[in-house]
Amino acid sequence: MTKRITFLGIETSCDETAAAVIRENDKGTADVLSNVVSSQISEHKKFGGVVPELAARAHLENIEYIIKVALDESKVSLNEIDGIAATAGPGLIVCLTVGLNIGKSIAAFSNKPFIAVNHLEGHALSPGIENNIQFPYLLLLISGGHSQFLIVKDVNQYEQLGTTIDDALGEAFDKTAKMLDLGYPGGPSVEKASKLGNKNFFKLPEPIINKAGCNLSFAGLKTAVLRESKKLNGDNKLKFNLAASFQNTINKILYKKTKIAIEMFKEKINSSNINLVVAGGVAANISIRENLKKLSEEIGFKTVYPSLKFCGDNAAMIAWAGIQRFKKNLLNKIDVEAKSRWPLDENAPYMKGPGLKI
Ligand code: KG4
Ligand code: ZN
Image 1 (cartoon, rainbow, N blue to C red):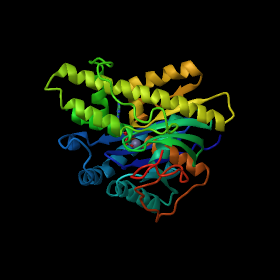
Image 2: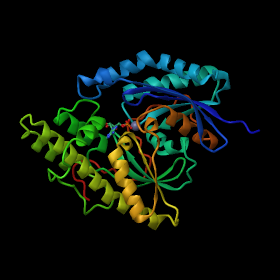
Image 3: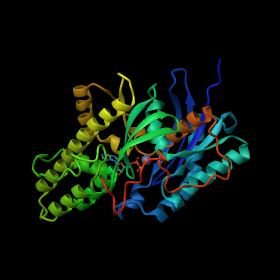
Image 4: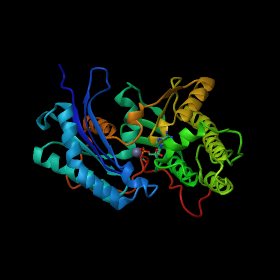
């Protein structure tokens, strides 16, 4: 019987302190032996968003305990673990270094291989935890810091087809929640509120909808929500209508841009079997899932969504990415450092900032 690789994963790039133990299984997917996530929602709630120093302090306070719980729950001793993977970027350096340093220390004292994982690769490979999905596939990565269409050609091989030229989609949800006073975390609260409103009530802009390929833009939409939110005068019905119209506009944008991305994917990859993976925190949004499912039925491709517990930040996806990199011998030295910016496709043009031409 071949030995099944087992990894400890650690994630502290933003506001979740997380550790997990994952083992490969015979189906080509993973047995999730433990997946512990400690969210800092209560700490950040009163500020309406993540405060880096608070997040870093909370990671420091919790990380050792979270790792201990993950190991205990997995019933696997450190001796039986084949390697340690920790997120090394992109993200807040003060936060990243907490998980990265403890991961490196565990690897050093236990004399195990260490893998510095790109958080975005964690999201990109996350569907593989539960699905034996073949490369290449099209990825729509939608999280609090990123919104991109990428071709996932293999582990460590990505080609960016489009990205946001301003805000990330999760950021647009979070800011909308703040403007409508719906509470933190923003995404789930906007989704909930949108179910209570009329999605056709407000006509909101769909920025760059007919240009710039499958690039995305949400800043103009956010400004429009701000303008309308100032006229609500405490009317809850109108507030829910605005949330519903925002969600509906996002769905329309993603529908159109995903259709374009699928065409681009088809031109580059000669395959009749097309899989679209939607990953990252915003992929938890059921309305977005249903909307893209509808598109997939119309133009003939398959959608793959990680389970909700693997959409938001977690360490299972970091351990899983660690195993995939380990199998390709993509190991890191113990002096590897955290990186705040770390695109999956290093050759993709940087799309943000003044002077941008689209
Ligand atoms: O992947 P993630 O946990 O962290 C980052 O890597 O950024 O994504 C967090 C983002 C937040 O902006 C959050 O509001 C959003 O995902 N999100 C949602 C939903 N659940 C989380 N957005 C829309 N609908 C949801 N149900
Ligand atoms: Zn994330």
